[in-house]
Length: 253
Image (cartoon, rainbow, N blue to C red; front, top):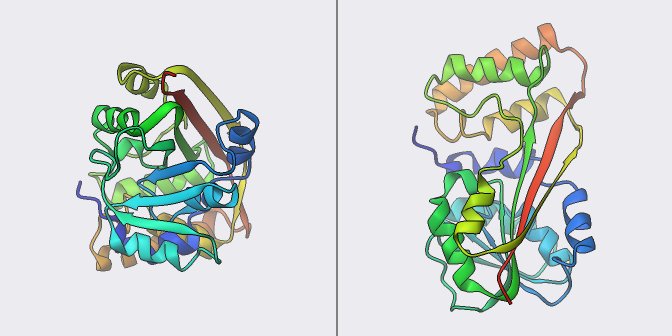
């Protein structure tokens, strides 16, 4: 399935919730996120995670292959000092040992993971940290997520993104094989409120819909989702279960 989030950049900027405050709070408590760090956010998209870095006082850099996504992020910065660079995680445009922090939010599964981990290791100073984070909706029997995923499957049989638990233990091997040490993971469950309109926008901004289907197919899907919500999930706003999961790995000192 060919995926281009630039095609869904407007919905992505408006309707994807980004990471909850629990992520930067936990990273700050671990000493991983603190002022004055040089921090590069790979696969930054519209910059939801990059903005947390900037708010924490880091010298924040957003890296993404899509100019459209970076442009949407710039419009959301609210005066934050964030540099934006077109590029990919597998070939970081930085010198060896020039960064204190590399983050990858909601993107690790799209990358050549061994190459991205090796590049992060090359770019980090001794003691620097790689943070891989995901914030996923959680399908449960009978909930709106499960019903929405069935609808995506019906409209886009090539999509394989459903049924996640929001936990990614295999990614610890990516960091370990790249030479990182002191690996730690944590997870936090956090419900997110969506109006019907916002949930439709969130799903249009997903890989299985707006980032991969032609515009007429997206419109048909959106109409079917609106009908599904009205018939089976009339509560507005919806309360959608989500799970935050993060891996913190440190470069050897």
